[in-house]
Amino acid sequence: EAQVLAMGASEFPEYDPLPAVPLELDLITELTASRKPFLNQQFTFANLYQHTQNLTYDIIHLATHSNFQAGDTSNAYIHLWQERLHFDQLRELPWQQTRELLVLSSCRTALGDLQAELGFAGLAVNTGVKSALASLWSVHDLGTLALMSEFYHHLNDPTVTTKAEALRQAQLALLHRSELAAVASHKQETVSPLFSQIQNRDFSHPYYWSSFLLIGSPW
Image (cartoon, rainbow, N blue to C red):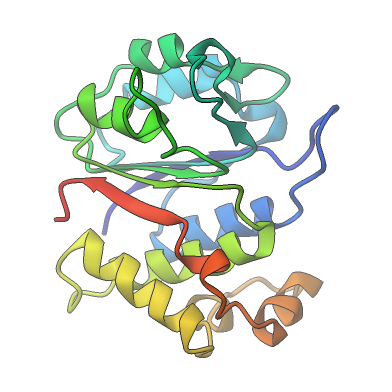
């Protein structure tokens, strides 16, 4: 099983909260038997840098707010806890060729321009990550939770042999309004009200599942 470094923020002083992020991180670490996620105050550049050096992590998953403005990469950022991760800082992270996947579970992280092709995701692949999963537009909090939980469910399935196929299966689950297996099997004792919202909501519109694409190696 792949080990995941799961980090994210759900509370922001100047942005709307992302209530699905804590559940997203819990589901991912549960599905992959990974260590406890880093949430809110723990989601700092110092922690990200330190733990990115840990070669036991195959996947790095960041769930938060982000933005990309074409023509000015200085204003592009991934929101950490009360600080922002900019392009130059992403280059500074100790990416390794053995790092299988970077998941940017936030808005517009694959959007780019002539100076930054495919945005943050393209930069990550160019600096050493084998693959990056990222979005082209502003994504929905609950829809992203549904897609990401299904993606990791299929990624953990031994019959699914590529990351690209895991993403395809997750997208099909939302498109066909299938029961979300990852959510249904969650072991959390106190059931979050988000569970019923996810299971009862229609995520079949492409807005919810087609924003995310896999860049780099499909395997």
